[in-house]
Image (cartoon, rainbow, N blue to C red; front, side, top):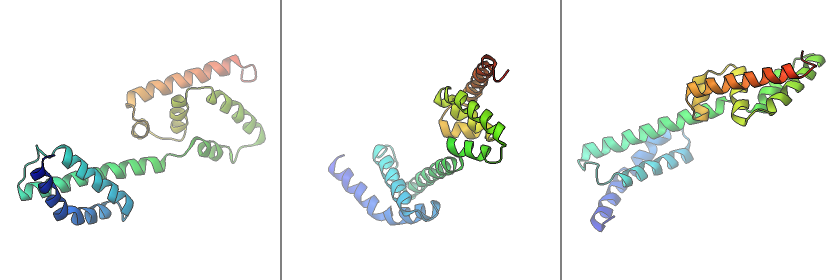
Length: 170
């Protein structure tokens, strides 16, 4: 950055950093650390696009706060998605807690079958068993819904093959 651009950036920063921080604190439910991280992200985007952003006072203020809004929305989406998806261990323990002993033995055998699947297949299969939609899962694993449907289908076919080849299941 050139010296006069640095001075302009610093004056913009001094003028809006407090308001932007307060705004992001509100958007993140009072999470100061997240607000600070998001504010840094906003300033980073401004640095990257500094030469293309118009310098009109109202436009710049609107641009900063719209960028902050978008960053906050993305943060809250990621936060809620990760918080609502249980770990594989939690899924298995929840499902086994009320089972009779014989069902637990079958369940443990099925667990071994599932563990032999690829990690992505395990995750998709277990989340589908938990009732998650392909859309919810796609937000978590960053794959398309169609790709997840294929992964799920292949995982089920593999499990069916393992069960058919195991004499205890036939």
